[in-house]
Length: 319
Image (cartoon, rainbow, N blue to C red; front, top):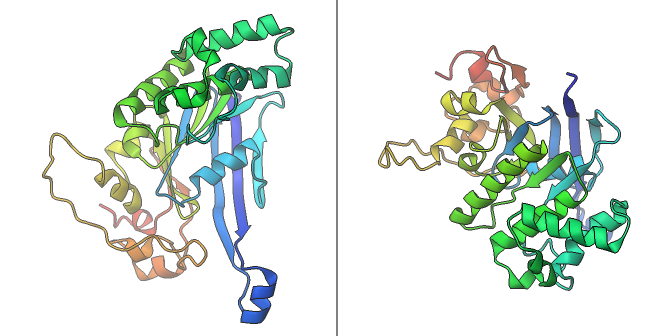
């Protein structure tokens, strides 16, 4: 598509988590490889928010780091449709992602200086003041240190720093997960406002479907390194197909039916070092068949414009 900004095709990342060589030799232990991201494909168009959702350890944050170049792929492609497309990342922890020894003004100004976006110090200072105002802070806040701010204010500083490089595309790695619920809403509303006003495109990472519902156009659900379902946000919430998506949705509190009957889904998330054969979700899935235990389902397109990787859906056993 002409307005596609990012295309990810067959993205895979394997980490060597083996014990040191001498330990392996003396103890006779084999090498251990962790397939954090396994054949992931998706695309994002201009102005869109695509969210990757899943439990901790499913590989969604690794995808974010691969997209911005913090990790190199083991296989697959990440294609930026325009070579001049500028990406920036907002990290999960506002307490760890800001240099505690720098004043806020220096933190926000660093990308401007590094990229040469303003010609002199007066212009840089004016731009920093403008950015602080955009995220709801005052110009005087630039003279303070990060420890003088709350968690929500620190995340606003992180957003200002991300915007300082004048990006078109922001990769947001669980930007609200370390914040209180009321503060989460403020940051999400700010991000939606900035998207409208600045024409930004988001890749949004989260473990919480109730969060991404309010910011996403498309949601992709990940499990053990793979996308198991992808659909427009309202389609996914109205008619989830994959059993794992249904499990995630069932964990969202419902104010209209707080005592609704829920069927708990047992089992723990398998080790990504030694995942189950076939469909990796089959040990926890109430719809698993013998085919699920031996044959890995492929992510297939559906008539409703979504994609799902599930033998039960393919065979019509999910209803």
